[in-house]
Amino acid sequence: MMRGLAFAAGLMLAGCASTQSAPQTAPKPPSADVIASQVGEKPTPTSPPAGQQWLYGSAEGAVASAQVYRALASYVRAVAISAAPHRQVVLAEGSTLAAPRFDDCGDKPLAAVFDADETLIWNLGAMRYFAEQHQDFDPAVWDQWEKTGTGKAIAMPGVIDAVKVMRGAGVTVIVNTNRTAANAKGSEDTLRAAGLGDFKHGETLFLMGDTPDGASKDGRRALIASRWCVIAMGGDQLGDFAQAFNARDLSVEGRKTLATSGPIADLWGHGWFLLSNPVYGPSIRGGFADIFPSDKQWEPK
Amino acid sequence: MMRGLAFAAGLMLAGCASTQSAPQTAPKPPSADVIASQVGEKPTPTSPPAGQQWLYGSAEGAVASAQVYRALASYVRAVAISAAPHRQVVLAEGSTLAAPRFDDCGDKPLAAVFDADETLIWNLGAMRYFAEQHQDFDPAVWDQWEKTGTGKAIAMPGVIDAVKVMRGAGVTVIVNTNRTAANAKGSEDTLRAAGLGDFKHGETLFLMGDTPDGASKDGRRALIASRWCVIAMGGDQLGDFAQAFNARDLSVEGRKTLATSGPIADLWGHGWFLLSNPVYGPSIRGGFADIFPSDKQWEPK
Image 1 (cartoon, chains in turn blue, orange):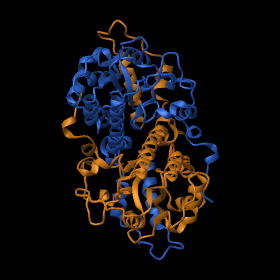
Image 2: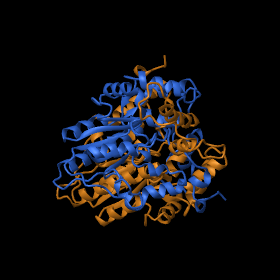
Image 3: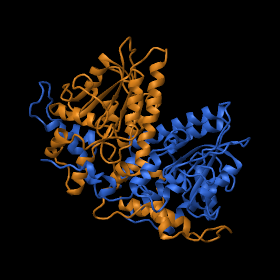
Image 4: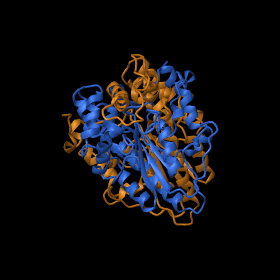
């Protein structure tokens, strides 16, 4: 990420330093102050990782979250008050991403389903602890975090307003997270302390262990959809929408194509809402050949 | 970012490994394959930086872009066909972020204004080159990129559809970028080759050097708003909306508060549209005390 930052600084410098055939109004190169204000500061050995700076610290990271939640709240309210028959946004059992089906809701009550970590809440306490300790993840520490992190996580920007809008429209907010069922009380307390209201394990909070399919959320989604009409889902990873996105045989490019083409593409922003999380998850994957198409290779002369 | 990835792997492991007082349906710990499918792969010395993996390679990064552009296109179309009098979304000259004013448009033609780099296009050729060379940014290389990168940058996900919708609604798409005026032809060609259509320097393409305020885009925004009714703006950095966000004396927290509270907060998703860019820019800034509020510190027992 230092490379990225240096790159950014350079982007600005490039624009400013280029003087050949400059127009009459070409500015002087900006001062170091101006450049710093445009590209930020060089990270220091005591800085959090750049991804955390963007996500947890920056105005841009906050705006990105708030922008999604405003759109989501508007969407949910519009669907809730619509007289049209409602349909699930959870994939019908047995249907596929290539040929998705969505069941009619009948008279089930309306709900919206969200992942918790880096979707509804930012895990500031645990993230800072790991980063300051220069420590890789430690399952025992995370287990402590689930149990005792109450008050040290915060609602992501825009979440509290969106939750208020949804509940005001008669839509129940439900959490489906891979936090463990063994620590249900800690997660209930953490969500409440973050200002999100009351969630109850097995009713509005579904955790790893509630169904026999482990880290897949499909079983819990099916359980929720058997009781509720799920009109919106929010998450930071595609597995928050359908486990099929995590199929082992999907290439980086194939996974991207699957998510952004065909009938599934129409769901983003219209029932499925993705929050940006460049810090961790299945999005962090791939070598140069996976990330950069070979026909876009370039080098200076 | 390796820390982030390891953290992610651990998040999954934590959920799966926790067995004390496990519910009856607790799953077996998932296989390494399942974990890999959830959290991705460990980066190798030959991997691009994690931020680039997320932004340029992942399904999540693509969806994040497409989701914003679908919302933006809907917004622009709705405003364009509305019978209500139009107003600029460019801050009126002399007004502030704390007390913004927006001028009436009169009968100016409608436009939407976008940054170029990491807003309309991904600079795949240059980004891959720098990363593969393990090279920090080089202004001379970037100058070459502006001149010769045509065909090696791509439209970001959702952009081409959004541009089509906007133009179909009679809204002119205008670019305001800190690429240099000296390389106008290269940038015109790059945008055209990415599928975005024709842009002409001084008419629908505004570059660093076009006005005397250097890397600030305020002067160019004022110039554009003197000719057009700007009903939407898109960018990946707050300076793409107002230079005041780049004020030197703003703290990390102060800048975030400025962007997400008061009257400005209502603009996100309603005239101002932010694209996620965790790779470079003024968002990449701050130490632990800036990124993590002190009252959220936590440690395991």
